[in-house]
Length: 216
Image (cartoon, rainbow, N blue to C red; front, side, top):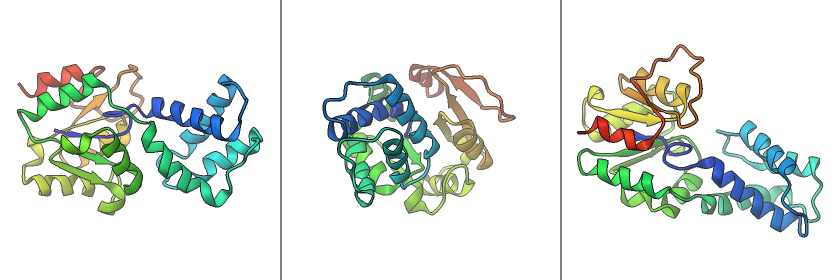
């Protein structure tokens, strides 16, 4: 069983909340938490999702909400890389289920993103101790939904694609991508979003607990 990382194994939305609080403390001393500022920060982050360079996120945010202390443009990427991974934590229930699945089958991660940040998140949440393989797009040279990143996992595990299940939250990148490589995709959809695509997942779950049904 293979997993996506952000918004599947890890709650990226909570991490963005934590990153916002760090920036508020560093760049806006004395400014109280603002729902409007947080909403705008999330909008800028969402626009740059999937882009390794996060300079534009903070530059845009600073332009809209001039800070008391503005991070120099050349320092933003390093600041993001250094701090954002530390904003992540793993839900204990998720960790317990992953460990339960690992007792039955090999497990792995396929994630898009910069190697430095993704590895730092994985180390911070101790996921590195759980998984048999971890494939990061920057190192692989391919990004989801390119079927070649899934084929890399197939070849590394030395199993037939039909024997693999891939769990992810993104219909296009995760489910459409793995299906291109003849892997069954389980759509992790905790917010019960409507499927407006032509992609038909092998299964849909709103809770990690339900994954145990597919290994026993």
